Image (cartoon, rainbow, N blue to C red):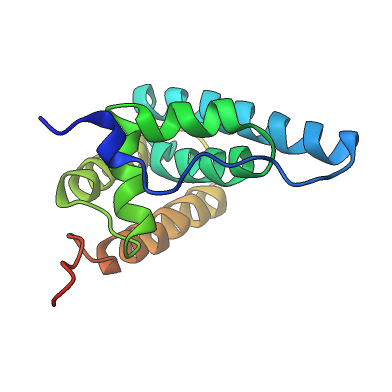
Amino acid sequence: MKDLKDTVCVDPVTPPQMGRTKRLAFQIIAVLSLIMAFVGILVPGIPATEFILLCAWSSSKASPRIYRFLHENRFTGPLLYNWHHGRVVSRKSKIAATISMLVCAILLLLSALHTLLIALCIGCMLCANIWIWSRPESVKKATV
């Protein structure tokens, strides 16, 4: 197995000079999106991948500790490496996202929610699924 340090695509950042309030806002976004990513792993319909990407972006601005954790983690490190090297989403992630959205759509159809709300949710999931499947599946190797 590859050493975890090999998966880090960018050196850990030092946060830019910014105001305390702005830095705190980025830290809150990072922590909340990391929590939502963990919830997304367990609950169908909540997108874990997008929350991990949001967490990586916001932590790069204000929290080198969370940023390093994400890039060195065996679950999120390869995902972030792929994203930083060509906006790549693996086939396994695409299939998992599709199944998760399908389960969520079935649950919505079985619920007693308003038809317009169900249609809106399923439409958003369909758009997200089309976008996910439009991403490449592997990192292109540099040719010399």
